[in-house]
Image 1 (spheres, rainbow, N blue to C red):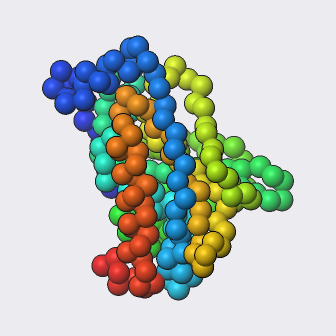
Image 2 (cartoon, rainbow, N blue to C red):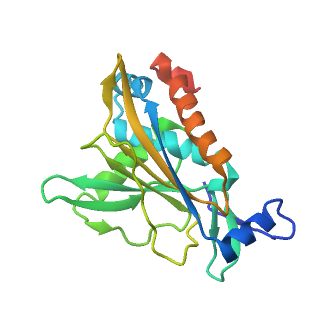
Length: 221
């Protein structure tokens, strides 16, 4: 998929006045954590020989790319832009030295294609640490804390308060009343999204996971 973007004219954009008010007067980032039922995703991944981690990355990437509010950024001349798609920039943890690799796998609309790309990138950068060089600009942030089931998690991006892409994190899943429940967190700038958009993200993540209940490739065709 070829990366491209559209420049945003604040005078023409329906959210232009709101965006300008938040950026100029009140740079707020909203953070929300919701428990997600990932039972179907775990079963689907196992039946299709997929790893849970890239499968979950695909789930959030699929929902993020469905909505414009998550695809805003800035170009190199400071213009507000909207990417045609964004890819996950995620962490790959290395138990042997307790460091991580930060890399981007290009988004695909198909979970199987994305998982294949993920495994290729993982192997390619197995010996790297920190951030892989020359990562694409059209990204959003993903990380995972699989060691603890938390109730809330917040990430502060210490820039000028103008980082617009989502920051998504999840924790350890645990069995509760016969289902695997997992905390999922999103941080998003209030200039581009409201509580409605934030809540819709979690609802659609759950809906997408629920569609995988059949546990085979045909459910996505």
